[in-house]
Structure formats: structure tokens, C-alpha cells
Length: 401
Image (cartoon, rainbow, N blue to C red; front, side, top):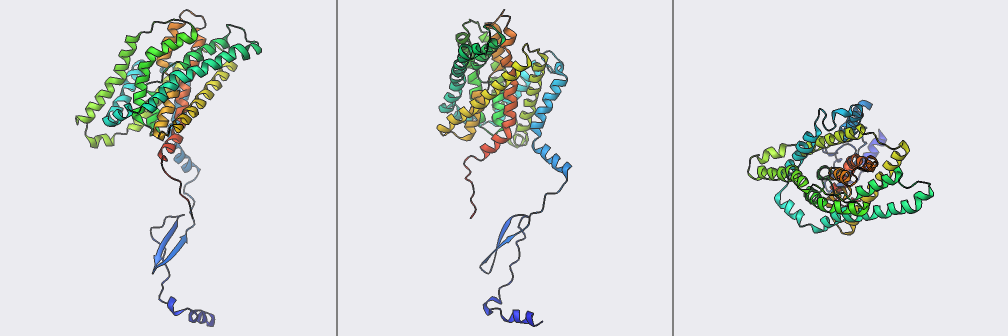
């Protein structure tokens, strides 16, 4: 028609040779793609197509991405349904399968995957070690003793709590809990799961266990006024069998080419560690559910809330300390787990020795029994968030023009 012809005749001659820009074949749906045609930059916007699949497909994708958290709650549910299966002396034999085989495998895999120079470098990272051990064996006992003293002398008398009551026994148990060193295995597993500094976790878990054998009994005697003879030789031998020996064997297997480097790359270390952690969670809750807690439901919920807030506040406190010292995020995550977690393995024997014959011993050990599964559960729930946080270390946010 005339209008169409008129439109064509009004084009500038210099524009006649410029073809229409074609969209890039590499453009992804929903992205802003750029292409050039004879020096002209063209910007093209493509409407994003909604993701396929219905409710079932989306639920399956969510379950696949969050499988570990779902597995944690499943383990707790199974422990509640049949706790006798996973207790000491039960069919699962956790005193062997978890304590020796499971923990030994963790450190053997660490020996396979860890470079010797990384472990040596971690040993020289004095700033991190002082932060972890100082917070675990000095700052935490001091804070808890001050808080417990305030509650005993000021707050509880106002509430009408009598001397020698169950609440005071729980406070004594919290005092004992604060003196315990970091655990050997759970701190390492959670640190590795979050892509934290594995070497720092190994070093501090091992050193903390050795220090705990000497320092923890002294701290417990100081805060309780008791005395104890700790079986140091027995504890050292168990540490050697479950930590030092598997780690050394892993290093030997790695550097003697018993296991080829191509095979090591195919081994899903992260998945194996997650499965062992789930086994630890399951057996821990089996033991917890089998014990009859000799306190009311209100006291138990109050204790759980106090211990949970203590863990969360301590983790933020450690994170702030690490930030003030300009530590990397991988070191910070290792410090958050190792400095805040407490070893039930050393705590129960020491409590049994110090309070032997005390009718309140069962109540005194309740904080230890509650804190141990709680630290594993809280740490497991934080794994996805902390892994993303560590992965973004040093990544600057992008800005759009």
C-alpha cells in the first residue's frame, strides 16, 4: 500500500545496508543477552519461562537439595521409635561401630584427602588455636560460672528455689559442661561439610582432647570443689586408636600410592562423612531416649532453651572474635564448631568420678546429655547456610548499571 511504500522511501540511505540484528543462539531463557551487528550493540530481553514440573516434581527437587536435613530428622524419629536398637550393648553395637569404626573412618578419610603441608600449615596457625582452646577452656567456664553464681545467689532465692534442689543440680551440671574440651569427631565432620578448614578442625580436636585430659579435671574440681583421679592412660590409648593411627594410615596410603590419585578423586568423601554423622546422631538420640530424665517437663524445656541460646550466642561470639582478627571464613567456621562444641566422651566419665555416690548424679549429667545431641542437630541444620557463606568468601557483590 501507499503507507508501506512511503515508509520504505523515508529510510535514510546510510541505514539501508544495516541488517536487522538476530538474537544470539547462546542466549539463556530469562537472561539479558548482547550481540553486535556492524558495530551496533543490541540488547534483547527474553521472558523467563516458569520452571517445569508440578508440586510433586518441585517437592522432589527440594528433598534432593535438602536431603541431609531431612535425614537428620528421620534419624531422630527412628531413634525415638526403637531406641534400644542403637544403644550401647544393642544390636548396632555403637561402642564399636561408631566409637571405633565410624570415628576411625572419619580420620582415615581425612588422612587420605588432607595434604601434609596443609596440616603443617594449620599447626602454625597459632591465632586460630588460641582462639578455639582459649574460648573453650577459659572463656566459656568463666562466663558460665559467673552466670550460675548470679542465679544461685540472687535470682533463684527470689523465685523460692530451695538449696539442694534439682535446679541447683542442673546448674552444677552446666558448670561441668562448660569445662569440657571440644569433641574429636563431630567438629571435624561439620567443618568438612561446610567446606571449612579441615586441618584446623583436626589439629584442635586432637589437641583439645589431650588438653582436656589434664585441664578439664582441674577446672571441674575448681568449680565443684571436688577431687578426681582421671584414667589418663586409658583416655590417651583411645585417642591414639581412634584419631592418631587412622590419620597416619590415611597419610601413608595417600603418599605411598596404595590408592591412586584417580581413585581418590572418585571417592565421595563428603557423602561418607554425612552418613557417619547421621549414624552418630541416631545412636546419640537412642541413648538419650532410653534414659529416664528425672526432672519435670517444664524444667527440661527451660534447660533445653538455655543450652540452645548458649550455643547460638557462643557461636556468634566466636564469629565476632574471628572477624576482629581478620580470619578467613574457612578458619572461622572451624572455630565456631570446635570452640563451642563439648565432648560428652570425656564429660560423662569425669562427672561420674567427681560426683560418685551423689544421689543427684543423674540430674547433674542431664545438661551433658541434652547438649550433645543439640550441638549435632544445630550444627547439621547450619551446614547449608555456612557452606554458602564460606563459598562466598572474597567474592564481591556484582552491581548492575
